[in-house]
Every structure is written in structure tokens, then in C-alpha cells.
Amino acid sequence: MDFELSEEHAALRATVEDFARKEVAPVIGDYYERCEFPYEIVAKMGEMGLFGLPIPEEYGGMGGDYFALCLALEELARVDSSVAITLEAGVSLGEMPIYRFGTEEQKQQWLPDLAAGRKLGAFGLTEPGGGSDAGATRTTARLEDGDWVINGSKAFITNSGTDITALVTVTAVTGEHDGRKEISAIIVPSGTAGFTVSEKYSKVGWSASDTHELFFDDCRVPEANLVGERGRGYAQFLSILDEGRIAIAALSVGLAQGCVDESIRYAREREAFGQAIGRYQAIQFKIADMEVRAHTARLAYYAAAAKMLRGEPFKKEAAIAKLVASNAAMDNARDATQIFGGYGFMNEYPVARFYRDAKILEIGEGTSEVQRMLIARQLGVA
Image (cartoon, rainbow, N blue to C red; front, side, top):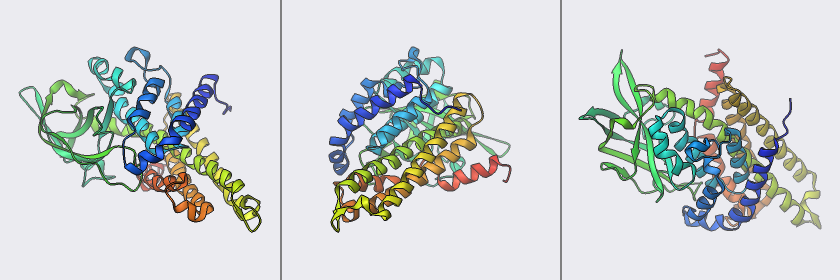
């Protein structure tokens, strides 16, 4: 078993690391404090081809693989998670439903701009009363004169209200069979009559990313905007979430490793009682534990990505990776803040931003409890 990166993957990782350190790190703190979306950074990421990493060249992408996306997410999140989640949601949630399940016409229409980062796509699954129970979808869509007429709302939707958002793919109840909801996926272009994007949320973290609640009031889109098979929308989105959990695990590893990076630097510079605090065993052990968590979580997402790329079942491995990595991010953020002491409570230091960003990783794209449920099911316990 060889965990060494290929030459192409290593080059990509180094390129994104350099970009994150030189282009993102110096400015992202100001965006974060203003709760402002970093359009300039996103544009540069688009020019680098990051939004097209796993998309074939025929649709304007880079022709790489999903693991390449994960490597990019890890390096970005070592510096900032708002930028990383913008990329993760744009690709994993915005592009992949269309790439995996869309018609050739849909792919040709939407993917080139999305893969180039000129436009962003969003993924409308979660509803205000649904949360983890995504199957309890209440948003409806009925066919009328060749159009889908959509009514309902979606909550916590990333990339849904930027100036460059092109579409949101939503799940909606399109019928009922044998007492069970028929849930389908439908593309709703931005600006469609009856589609309203609410004011952005005031969030604990990810303050430089874009998140909104969405409302649909007799919103009409063409019947051809159906993504994949009618009635298969829920199953399609679950498979998208399996992939996305690997991506979120990679992002979580980046945050966890960023906490290690900052703590090592601070431990070397900060003096207390006549010497650098890194000379004290209490600090050494804390940083060692942080590195162990980041390293272990990285191996978990590498393993899940490897199974995915081989075409093998990877649901359990994705859930394990997401659970382990999000726990590592939260634990490392807490320990890094403790190492920094009072300065760790000041927003001018990256670890304060990391602390604010870490908690959502245990919630988004499936809570830690959902991951445990999925693992148990895969083991045949439930």
C-alpha cells in the first residue's frame, strides 16, 4: 500500500498551498470580519481551474479526479475554511449533481461556467423543519403545462445568493407511490420568478462564505430542468452526499492541520517564565496530540477517496472519514485556542477563526450522529 502522492497530485497540492499562503492568508481576515464574500479570491481560484478539478475537459473542466479536489480543499482550509467551503459546495454540491445525473444538454449548458468558476451552483436539500431528516421534504413541484411549479423553502444553502450564483438544484416532492413520497431533483436558475433568496444568515463561523434561506412561491421552470430520473432525486442526492463527506473530511483535515501549523509557530515565538512555551512538556504533548489527530484523519479520507476512485462501495469509509476528521478539527481548534491563551480569543489571530469555523464541520453534510448511524448500518447493526 502506497500513500505517496502522484507527481500530478503533489504538484497540485503544492500549487494550492502556495496560493493559500500568498493570496488568501493576507486578506481573508478582513473579509471574515466584514462578513463579505471574497469575489476576488474566488475569481483567482476559477482561473487556476480549481472549480473544474473533477470535471472532464469536454465540459470545461481540468479532467482530474475527486481526490484532486480533496487535496485542494485541505490546503485551502489550512488557511481559511470560508474559501474552502465555497469551493467544496461549488463543486461537490453545485456541479456534481448535474455532472453525475444531468442530461447532456444540461451538462453543456451549465458545467462550463461552473467549472471555470465564472458561476456558482447551489444544492437545495435541507429544509427549515427537516435538518437531518432530509426524507421529510415538504417542498413540492407539480407539472403544469410543461413546467414544474415549485412551492416551499430550503434552509442553510451555501453559495445560493452571490452575484455569480447561476442555479440551485432542489429536491421536491413530485408525487406519491404506495404511501411514500416521490422526491425529484430540479434545476432552478437564479432570477426565476417566484424564487426568492432571503437575507444572508448571521453565522458563528464561515463568515466569508455565502449562506441563505430560499423560498419558492409558484416558481415555474421547464419540465426539462428535471435532473436524473423522476422520483430518484432523494437517492441521487444521498449519493452526492457520500462523495461530499470525503470532501468535508479533507476540509476538516486542513483546519486541523492549520491549527497545528499556527500552534507550532506560536510555541516557538511566545515566551513565558523565561523561555519559549514550546519548551514546556504540557505544550509539546498538546501539539503532538493535535498532529496525531490530523494525521489519522488524513489517512481516513485518503482511504475513502481511494475506494471511491476504484469504483468500490465507500459509504462506510466516507462516514468514518467525515466523523474522524470533523472531531479532529473541533478538538484541534479547542487546543490551539488554549495554547494561544488570551490571544486565541482575539479575532486577529487565525486560531480564533478556526475555532469559530470548526463546529459546523460536526453538523454540515450529515451530523456526527448521522455518521455513526450510517456506520452502524453498514456494519449490519441497524
